[in-house]
Amino acid sequence: MLTQVAEGVLVHESVFCQSNAVVVQGPDGVLLVDAGVYGDELACLVEDIQELGQSVVVGFSTHPHWDHLLWHPGLGDAPRYGTARCAATAADRLSGGVAAVARLVGIPDEVPLDLLGGITGLPAGATRIPWHGPAVRIVEHDAHAPGHAALLVEERRVLVAGDLLSDVLVPLLDLRGTADPLGDYLAALRLLDGVAGEVDVVVPGHGSVGGRDQLRDRIDLDTAYLLALRADEVPSDPRVGPSARAGWDWVAGTHERQLEQLAQRQA
Image (cartoon, rainbow, N blue to C red; front, side, top):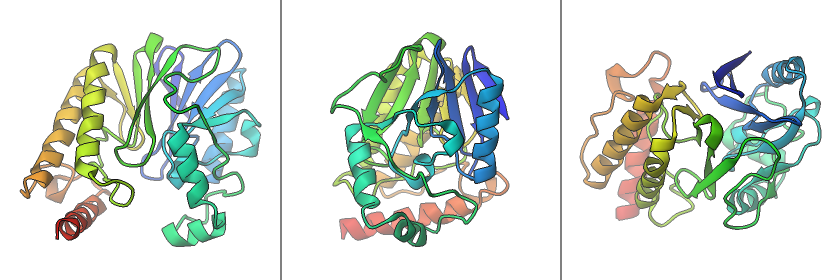
């Protein structure tokens, strides 16, 4: 089911890690960001867009992780974009075949893989999504994954944050593809802080949609978490430990693995 979060901007939430697909309405059709995960949910999204009387004219993946690279035949053959680095990374990771990736990362059986990937990279340094709808600014950074993009729907004052600024996930670092994962993530948060005055609604890749005040709170919370890791201190973060939201206790394990990997890198 699509839920409106701002004029002309709607969100479809998956039961998989509370993933958010974002629909931005334009005069000729919609921009679909991070389409979704499970097959039945993607089929539902197809029907929801049809009930709006529109079709998908542009797709966009915020970053090159499998759960943000999915598609459904009913969404049509609109161009699907990512940043140049996102598209190149996705192509490289899928070069050994989709089945190999599915085995490696444990993609659930309910996920349709036929159209996984297939995104085209925008020109390096592109700052706008090419379409005829509301202006969408690309805020590219290297936190979480190479060529990650947050999107600012300027007229609607909506920030589509990708896998940053979650109320249920701590910052998940890219510990494979960058020399300074903490520094890259902090730099990304500074970029998002720089556009926060233009935002009334933030939509994370996973978690709850938030308002302007929650955006600032999430930037501060993520920054504090990362600074604690950098100082080799124990973060005081409500997303890990006994205060974590029900069903999200596994985030504490992810946090511990990040600590171990950071310690190995330092060693």
